[in-house]
Length: 147
Image (cartoon, helix red, strand yellow):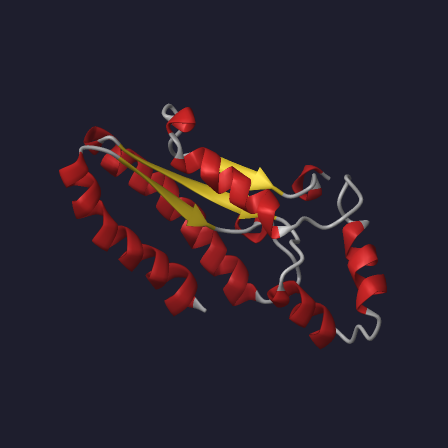
C-alpha cells in the first residue's frame, strides 16, 4: 500500500518536475482520499498512505512554487468504482444495490459519487483556471467530511 500510494506519487512527481521546470510551469495533482483527512476504524495502512499524499502535496507546493509548479491534492469520498464495489463485497454485502444506497446515505447529498465527479475537479486543477491554487485540498465527497 505504501509502495503504490506514497512511493508512486513521489516518483511520478520526481520525474515530472524536470519537464515542468523546462516548460516554465506546471500543475501536479496528487490523488488522496477523504481518509487522508479523517480517520476510520479500518485499514490503517490505507489511511496513513493517503495522509502522506496530502502532506506531500502541501510540501511540494511550497518547494516548487518558485518554479511556477502548482501542487494540489484531491480527496474523493465514496465513488462508485470497482475498488468500492470490492470493498462492499469483502464486507459481506450480497445485495450491491442496497449496500450502495446504504453507503450513499452516509453523505449529506444522499448518494455516492461517480468517477466523472472527480475527473472534473482534476480538470479544474490542471487548467489555468486554477492558476492561483496551490497547496490546496479539493474535497469531492458529497459532504461526507462535513459531518
